[in-house]
Image (cartoon, rainbow, N blue to C red; front, side, top):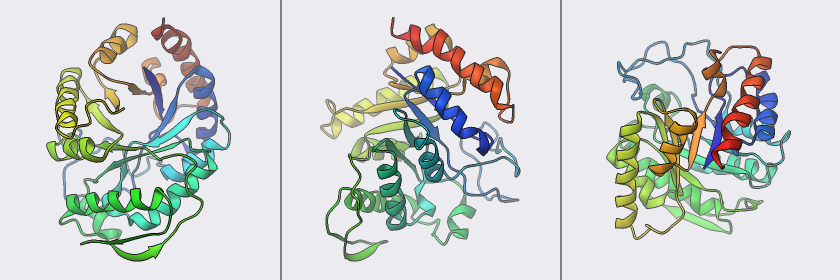
Length: 291
């Protein structure tokens, strides 16, 4: 089992120290969230809270995940970084491929791309992307990304994206894994079809168990039952050694967490106490979970 540190909504000037502490404590990865902007009003419900409200404010800090990965990669040696998850629907995949190529090269291949559609109509429209047909557009964008990132001279002619032969150099030093986010049946089918793993948002244990079982069935339908596949989980009701082992028993391979939350610290707390929480989590959980 692996542990990933989420840096969601933390002050940007703390990220380097948090990454170094995570590496020393035995974390395997940093999870990088994505939010483009905070619109004063939004015309859709946020899908991961009971009442559809956003649990952050207009003043909450969000780092661009690709810039943050490059920055933290420069001060670490072993940590990997992945977006959890980047909203692909509002982005152009050709431009994104250029960014991913660069981050993968700068980190020595320590980068994975977690991908979702996105939920806010404003993020689509104000970034010049249509909200309509967003699922089909994202499926095509994933094809474009994989094609370009795999290297060589390539071309693509689809419904939403069209280009003649091009090449981006350098090619990533290793294959960039794609982790697909989302809890809907469409998202799970997308993960089973094209993903190297699946990334959850906040879920209760019973829902997480059922979703993993469904993903395994879908992978079998795709003749991928024996393929390596990551299950990245944000479980909101199972913690501690016993709770994490229970998550492992249902198939979770990567637990995403914020250790300072268990010590009563908020996102905007000073960095020193957060570093203490990370170290304590490493000593009390990560070291012992493998015993």
